[in-house]
Image (cartoon, rainbow, N blue to C red; front, side, top):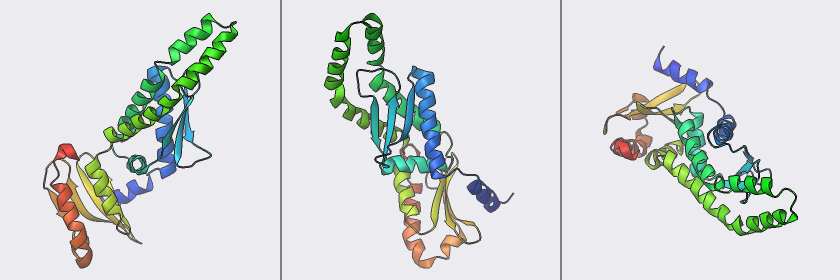
Length: 235
């Protein structure tokens, strides 16, 4: 099968952005339960569509919900998951789940133990409320930890490069373990413009479709060269 036909076929089977985001939400729910025994529900805040809520379904002395702003870095990761970048969904969800567990786990067992020992004592309810009040300010660090998880999974060099490429009309970027490819969406096909090696520094190919764009190539090719010359461990 020709490369162009294969690229077009892959494009047709890609999930939508919303589906990719839901895959991430489902992965978080599954891993928090399977790895840490934390039953969670992950969803978009109905009052703020630019915010993800992670809600713990069991008792805790901390906030029951963690609110995570869906900033540009988060959206870039979801777009890369949408493009089926190998291993990214697992890697990113693992990092998020680690931060979520680090926030809730220290408090959750203590609450369960207290409830078992003092089921009939009204004082327990009061102390739990007091604990929640004291712990409320700690929700902010949890948000920062989620941002750190984004940083762990997100390559700043690639994210910056992808953002610059997709700023050009009809341009898209695909990345796998072997290379990064830049495409242009046309009425007939997804046209390959350039390929950058992900295994060797300084190796890239400019296709004739890009070389013919006399004005545009003066802006695009320098960006490709700069990314191609970026050390592999910094991408």
